[in-house]
Length: 289
Image (cartoon, rainbow, N blue to C red; front, side):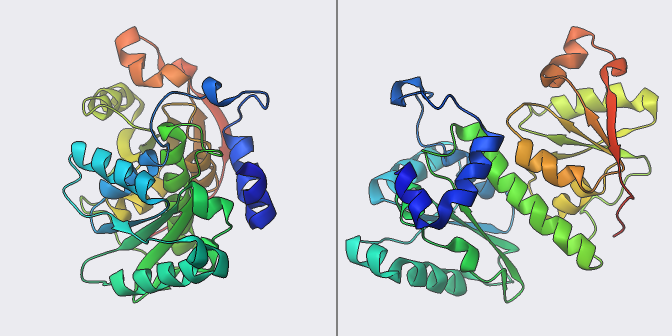
């Protein structure tokens, strides 16, 4: 499937995944983490966001497993699915069906964004989600490829969608004024935290940052589109794991000062680690709303 995907025009995407999420080229299927489809990571990010619809394009058995697991985790909303067969896959009708479904769902009264996820078979067949409109009726359209043969685990799949959303939001900021965060802007410089965290972690990290005159900012993946703007309007970013290179790269182009912290930063307050572990990496002019 990897060779088929490269031959179908997905070589650039797969090369980026290989760079961001390197694995041993000699590794076989038994060397992969024994877990369900990695795309669940991207699916969960979309399902946790307000006013965001998620549509899957993949084999029916894969979609069944992903939707079952998502509702097991309390998704409480529908997951879109565009079915296909050999004919629609080969003739390109699948892409037209995806495009039609996106237009049908693009209701600005309900959604800020629609996420379309290509699973293994559509990715290997080269279904070109990048040809979808970037916006329909004011609703943002984000298409990503999350094949099991290119994205190792759930953690990397979360990064794929978070990175795509941050890239889109950064382009909106560059283009002009954007919507302010629901909770308003902090009177202190904020630190954007990248990666999944336990509910108490931002509070603990916020207390650790307070003596430095800083405040804890949004956690990426966010729970709402407008939080992406707040994440990009930070003074620094704090990656909590090594699985977030795409989200980290998009923040790197936007923030004043980017901080590199150890992988165990989430447990830093509990281990008694000190802010001296922080190291400056780069500077860039700050964005405006």
